[in-house]
Image (tube, rainbow, N blue to C red; front, side, top):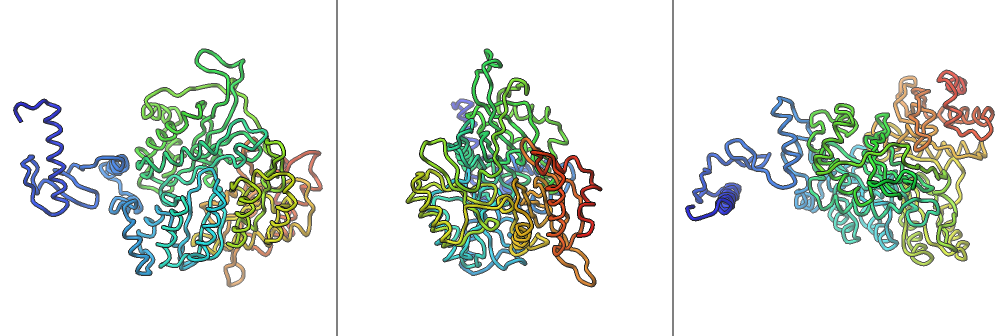
Length: 603
């Protein structure tokens, strides 16, 4: 290589090495004379290596190197980590399509790997797939909802489920329809890649973004930008476990940002706190580590970000997590546990190093937080900030709509609105931008299709996961139980305040039972010689300004007794509350024994 510059020599060496690796991958002899030999080059499940050192380049390198650090320390990778190492799930498209064409479901660790494409094989609950989408900010168009309804009729169960992340699921998908569904959602300009497995779920935002009279900032645009950032940075798919990101604009409907791994909460810096390095205006507070199923909310970091900074900082946070999250114990592989191990100061130092600049640290006394939340704002008719316009929050039976109902709602959005549909974290949807003069026609057509826009305070705050009818982990049929419970409570009470009741089927806490006024987590209860569906009952949870983890008060209650137990607690609240006292405030001033005593007869 005489006569070449050092830079040219390095380029040629890299080029010839790449040629050698490519030939080795294809079983061909090495002929370049680069110095590497076929005996030195190895192609295995972990990728190509030379003399035992991995030849990894590009975005997958972060995750593979993280795995290597654990194995080098003599630790064994979790079986899911080993599965990802043996076969990159992002490169399985052809295999998934071929399996669909053969009418076969996945087996073994392929069941887990299929989740990276949004395809969940949910046996034994159903011999079928569930597909979860990743809808950023919960916003879609009428034509997309119509297309999903048609797709569900052709290739799924003829209905759609709204999730607690303002997202959609299709269920009862036969093995031979996986191809149809995978192609179908993409043809609707929707995405399922990364909606399951060890990935970042759809980014949530304030569902009234742009129409809320009280919000500090529109957040759906940021959720959409974050969505595209994730899709275009493949290292965002190399996480140790799942990950959640939420933006809250300070408006009337909470995005539940404090239950997410990363929360961006809008606050205002007043003129009195402004200085040479900080102008007055709206910023986002950074919170980290929310995972209420593990009894922890996201905690304030003292970091303040502009909207434009949120993408890069979130990316840096995720990369630090990819590099350092636990790859051996799935129970400890969430961000919360890395924060618990390191502490926030060390973690934020690593984020700064990854980002390449210092984070802006501001004391709480320098910002103005807001609390405009209205717990009924996601149901019924409400005025928008646009004069003469209103939105309608449609109520669903625990988040489920038929394909026919979906088509009607899409037509209403197109005819009377601007084509937008907003999904909420409360398992319902909003039709925005309705002219006030058109409201009677819209409300009537909602009723005509079997849905409702007015809700009792029980149904307005009723949340339920899929349950045992569609999830192998669930210990009870939560959706059916939720409807039975609501019907019973409505027959007993005419509530004048909202009471949130959350039913979740297992420890994954998809319905976030710990933040409900009343939360139920399914269990099996011994009754005679049988094991029947039952629940542990927690009381007094909340979020946002009412942030509390509910306390477990009742254990192993058969579901047949649950309505009476919950009714007894609500009756005690209605009788003994102070003026203006919310349910969670009432619960907070009761001891566990006092709460338990309210329903002794029912248990």
